[in-house]
Length: 318
Image 1 (tube, rainbow, N blue to C red):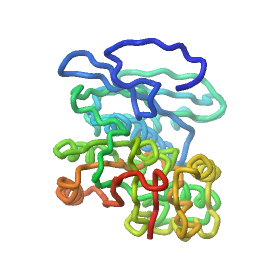
Image 2 (image 1 turned 60 degrees about the vertical axis):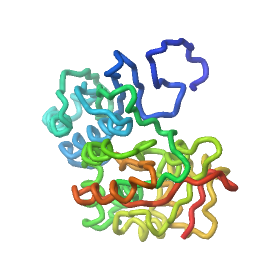
Image 3 (image 1 turned 90 degrees about the vertical axis):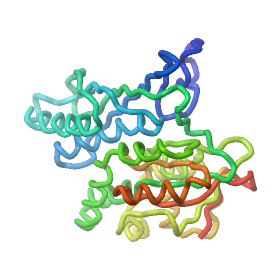
Image 4 (image 1 turned 60 degrees about the horizontal axis):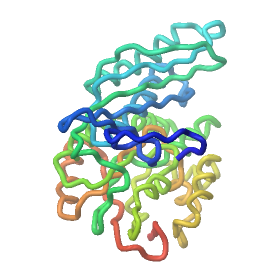
């Protein structure tokens, strides 16, 4: 919990800021709980329309990570209208609106201010049955871990800004970022999923660390982790991010990555924008869920399992 914030109790606030979950959840009735989240950032790509799609997909993702369905969204906008053509803002908003529509939600307004650089995102409202919320820390012994998007977005975008990433790697990263997690979330609701989160700024290992409860560990098979083509090679050439180093420093006492190459460690800590879902599913349902995801076009991979606590929270093996 953030220090200094006043504490209050409401029995209907099922998930709030005192946890490290992806969104807040408030119970309205025995059948309906509201999922509330927001996210926004400065442009990650040059094209404003594409930026709008990526920022919206990123904000919408937290509803899916909680097991919810998107219902409505509000725009969050900052824009330097005196320095930039307002048609650029129109393209950003068009991209965001298309993603909200694709999610099945309605864009119902928003708020804008003037600022020195563009900022865009969404405040999103979704719904979920109170008994079907997927917290990020509900993993159970023996669960298999499935990741629904490849890693390496941060490395590739860093390299792209220095004209070092190939066109193929850049386009693959953009396609991944603008892809909604809706399709993976729709499928996983039919299976025995115990926990879920999405991989964003804390990287794969950082967000996985939030999923590990007391008495449990995660065993990750590094060779099974999906990576965007070209990202490993770029990391090996030190096209890396400061945020990845912060993630590594934060997790260093909880993770064993001995024997893992420098470039692969960087990918595992690499901050993702609009990353995939990290799903902890019962072993009996894992193969069926993985097959279902792949048959429906989701690039999903089983990357590890939940075990009894060993020497650390997460062990990465080749």
